Image (cartoon, rainbow, N blue to C red; front, top):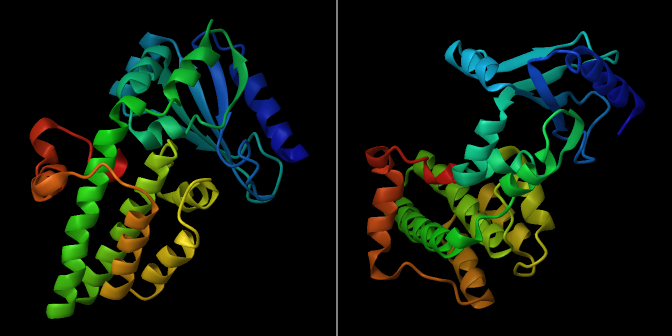
Length: 261
């Protein structure tokens, strides 16, 4: 962490620690992940008491940003308001990107007993759902492979590129699930995939070739590489039903779209 980032965090502590409605300040983002650039912002979360959080949520006032705490060119802070109960719910049913945001963190101050243990529960990979996730991601690949074959029969540049991006996403999500790594949102997906320890040799290069020049041949090569690497928990003959439920019918049960799981 660079000295000017440390100064910004110290100013955030000085600003919020005296506030009786603020129970904790958690620093995250690239600064904590050791991926920060000199002009990177400071990502943080304020943990509020329940009444203050409910009021902020009701008023659609859950985000905050500004540059008064920073003293470097391009610097600013970017925060969210949460509560302990909100984190408890996240630990129970939060999406992988929501949980992954706390994978790398620093508690700048806390008035909450057991906060670190709660964050450990938030960032735990949901192993109890691992097989189901793998089956659903595999079904996505089956459907997308069919879409790619359709672009050969009926050339469609939009569908071709849309399919290529999502094919790479779900091939990568299979690898992340195999390694029990939370999906960290689209911004950090590639970094986590590159650093996943257990994957087919040359797999990321193969995925890059799909993004750079989508083709049925590359889709087939990715499919073969995955299936040669290990025996996956397959969705069976009902993969198309899974594909429909997870893409077209997710609204029926107010489910999060599969790409955000």
